[in-house]
Length: 65
Image 1 (cartoon, rainbow, N blue to C red):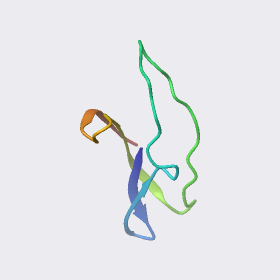
Image 2 (image 1 turned 180 degrees about the vertical axis):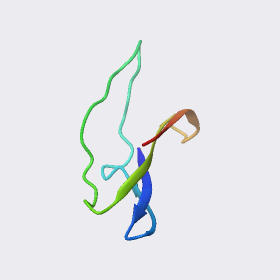
Image 3 (image 1 turned 90 degrees about the horizontal axis):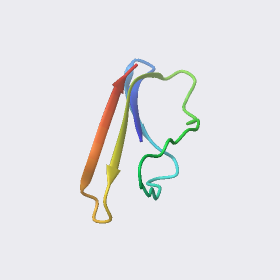
Image 4 (image 1 turned 90 degrees about the vertical axis):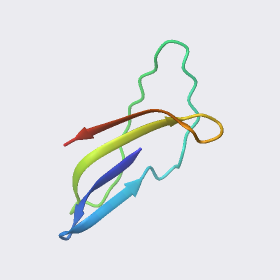
């Protein structure tokens, strides 16, 4: 998961602090949680990528805030 936006008027990006997390999908899985980020940051896009063991992207979804 990656957050992108601006911080103090400059481009800003923050990856999920825990790094990649294992995920097993049999039918579907809902993942919830909170991500700490600087309160001054304006988050404009959230991107989530699902990769295989080799790092190849299997699915990607971005949401504009």
